[in-house]
Structures are given as structure tokens and as C-alpha cells.
Image (cartoon, rainbow, N blue to C red; front, side):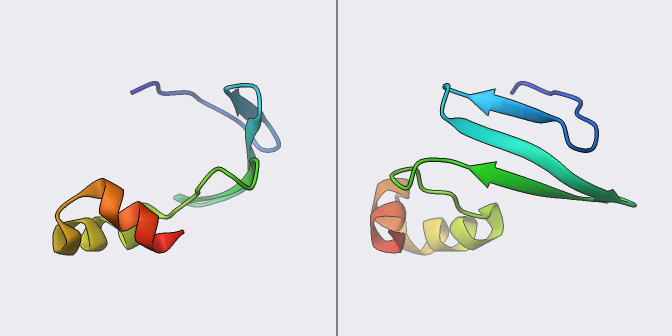
Length: 66
């Protein structure tokens, strides 16, 4: 895992076409903006983990969600 520090309005670029920007910081919560091609699936972890347990495989879960 790569750990980075970012301040408000700073961003990171992943693979040249995915941009993650810190939009706000309030207490222990941050708001992120994610810009990515429509072909890239973006999911909150808490929605994927229970589905993974039920389905038994990551591939089956993500193909069902898309």
C-alpha cells in the first residue's frame, strides 16, 4: 500500500487517467472527488465486502454490480 499525504485541493493521478482530489476536510472525514473514464468501476468498499462474502468471488460480484 502506498500512503500519501494531501492537503485541501491537492490531487493524485493514477495511471495517467484517474484523478483523485481532496475536496474537503472536516474533522476526521474527508471528501474526495474522483475523475475516471466511464470504463473504470468505482465502488465504496462497504458495499463490495458483504457482496463478496455472499458471492464467494470478487469477479462474480463486480460483474453483477456493473
